[in-house]
Image 1 (cartoon, rainbow, N blue to C red):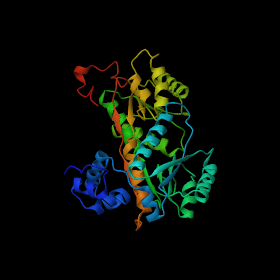
Image 2: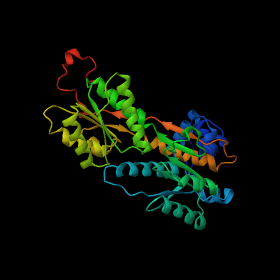
Image 3: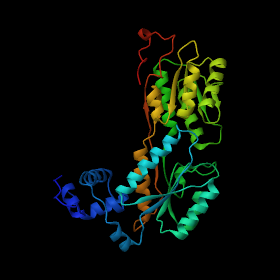
Image 4: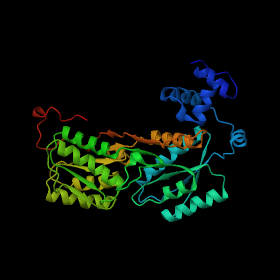
Length: 356
């Protein structure tokens, strides 16, 4: 890789610096699905290092595209889980900007109102496509966009009792929630815990059900019980505290895996009233979790955002890929002080205690 020439960077100077063709650089910007992952990473690093920005006016004249991507701004239930939405929005804005696009935000009270927002933007604004979040059972938003022939990608799989996400006709990017809670549960098993409870959301939430599945399968694979160790509740700190208190009194758990950091913070508060140390692991790795030393599962939001933009750009390219793009990315566990070993475990006789 050579050093770029001084002055405003162009496709040619970026291509020379990266050691690739001008067309390859153009594909990285406009049609990343045509480029190998290794070349994509290389050229993007050069684009970032030289501060390249596409000429939007020229692109609009050439393609008729505006570079505008619509996204519904969702209200947050609390300042903790709202941080996840904020993190994704920031990552998505950066990924879109790097590709020469911009995010157009709008608000809506529910799914039907969100569809009305789509219609208004399509009718009144030169919008290229949309990004959808918070997919769920009975979600009609994707169906409407498909019927209109509008480009879109969902952050979240389509949840259905009859159609597998892998056969979906539209593109999506999601985080493997089951892998995240499985890693959290395995981490606690490695610390010597055998009575591990789960605090999640009521059945019917695709994301919540998947996170419960990771905990359940890991314990069953280890030959450990799950009956009576699972509590479902609304998302929030008070609900997490109440659920944790119930499990501590009725199930004698020594550790808790939670479907969100909000629930985990409530559980952590309840655990501090216990006579024995109780380990707690949350989900989403928010700044609050880091501040209080709570172990949590981190979602790779930057990777998700870049994949979402890549998928949307593929739909706007010519030719359009024949198949929808489906990508499931792996989260990672961030272990902190809250996932302690149970009081009855002697580290001299438990070689896995303290592992992550």
